[in-house]
Length: 291
Picture 1 (cartoon, rainbow, N blue to C red):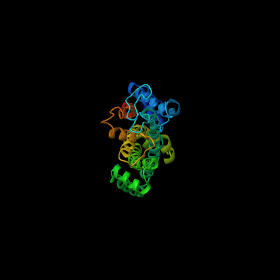
Picture 2: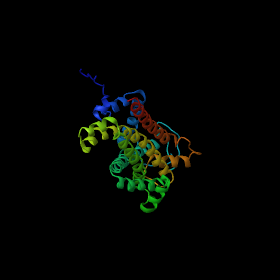
Picture 3: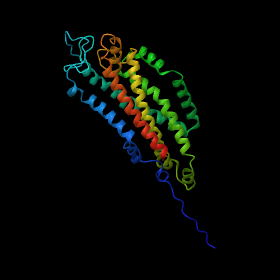
């Protein structure tokens, strides 16, 4: 008597140890993902091309044109000292791009490495988890105030606050993902067949952890825009005359009674940028749930 065992179909994600890069690009080709990508790209290109797109220098003052309403010469109007708001907004985007594409990934990488280390060693896990608890015990605004008192306001302070705020988030997400994947049946099967932990980690565990980390990365970037804006608005971040979206919104709020158009331009850019990042995050999350 011969026992015949039918082969069981194996999910492609299980074979490769997780979704590949095509799945992430596929998420960005959906309606929400593509819309978000376009919105972020438009804002990013506008900031990168500020020296060529801005009609005036960001610190150029026009005598007799203070708090001017939008016109052909000044599409977003001027501020209280006669500087062109459109030009300052375009240059201010660069600060947010710097925060988004440098500070957030730095916090994500550091957090992921600590989370990976915590998932592989019990003693290290306890120490790292307690350090995460210590960071999370302080609200972000308290960290911002403390660092500003030590180092002073500036781009470096904003970046440090964002890095510290994101490390425990990505660390705990990575730790949870690694521990979950290591207990999946196909990982246990690979271990039973003699596969080494290093091979399992590279082949199965890390690829499966990339999906939730990618979703969190897009979400963290949108939060970073608000952190920069809040810190600059409170005087803890970028200080005048350097333009940033947060400082422009603060100056616009102070002059809103005399020139309500002042705050519209910078605030619109913030809304478009955050909306684009949130749409990308939602598209990636939806793609991850379907797999």
